[in-house]
Image 1 (cartoon, helix red, strand yellow):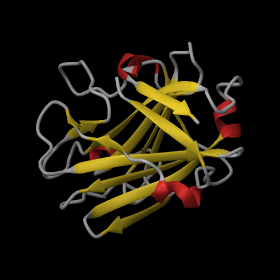
Image 2 (cartoon, helix red, strand yellow; image 1 turned 180 degrees about the horizontal axis):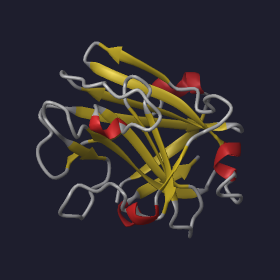
Image 3 (cartoon, one colour; image 1 turned 90 degrees about the vertical axis):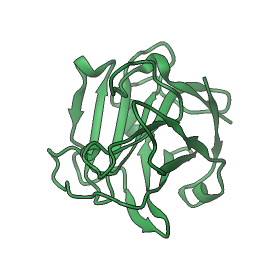
Image 4 (cartoon, helix red, strand yellow; image 1 turned 180 degrees about the vertical axis):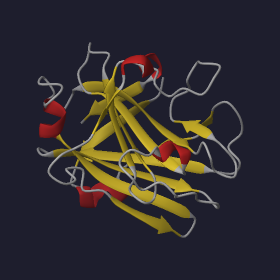
Length: 198
């Protein structure tokens, strides 16, 4: 399994952080699409930047009940507490359609709808070769479900990054760490990689 080091920094530091390639094609080809992830953290939040090089971007879903994975979608799944199989999955399309889930597998996944506006403060935009999304995952939000979550140097958690598009011109599924299922399914915490805070 791959490992990524989450360095200390602010949201503004994301472009300077090392990139984790989302380059493992799953259940089909990549169709010339590529993606990457960059993370950093401070005392308030975990900051995430996901970028995709994608010529034909689908961005049709906008409502809270719709599925961003039907469009061009970038996703981050992570298990915040060692020994706890549950994970949070955060999925976005270019228009800010968000899926936020909590569970230990697809069968017990619960969709969460953040209250009090958007605690993730996302920013989505097109780029010369595709699109990107940046957002914050506030530590206080994570601790609502994982009270023991306390990022610090040396702490190790698990996670994976994905690029997909179920209803795009070329349906595709890419991951940072490979998934050992025969059919499309990202909800496999046993196949998460290592995320190490520095």
